[in-house]
Image (tube, rainbow, N blue to C red; front, top):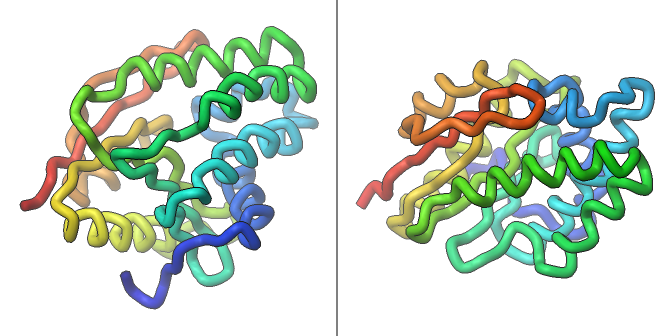
Length: 198
C-alpha cells in the first residue's frame, strides 16, 4: 500500500459513514432507494453504518488519511453481513423510512447476493469519495492500493457497479463486465469481474 491509504479502525466508523452517505446521495441506485430527499442522508446513513461497521471485522476497509474516501473489500472467507445483521437490517431501515422502502432496498441486496459468482473472490462492496473531495483521484487511489494487496495474494475481485459512469474507471484497472442486474426501480447494475493476476 502507498502512504495515501491505511486500514480503517472502529474509530473511523462515523467518518466512513459520512463519506458513504455523501458519495451515494445521488447514486442512480442508492439515491432513489431513499425517495424522501429531505431525509435521504439521515436514512441512508443507517444502512451505510450497518455495512461499514460490519466490514471493520476484517482488515480490508481502506481509507485515505482523513477518510475523504473509503473502500470496503470483503475477503473470500468473509461475509458482508452476519446473519444477525442481515436479519435486522430491514427493520432498521423500516424504522427510519417505511416498510415498503425498506423491503425494496432489501430486494436489491438480495438480487446482488443471488448474482455472486460461485468461486471464491474478494468483494469490493463499497467504494466512495465524499462529495467535497471528488475529482482528486482519491477513490481510484484506494482501489489501486486494495488491488495491489489482493494481487499479492493471487485472488480475483468482484463488484457491482451501481453507476454506469464508473464502469470505464473499473475497466481501466482490469475489471470486465460480467452480467447485469435490473433493480425493481428500473436501474441497471453492472456486475464486474477482475481475474487473479497470478
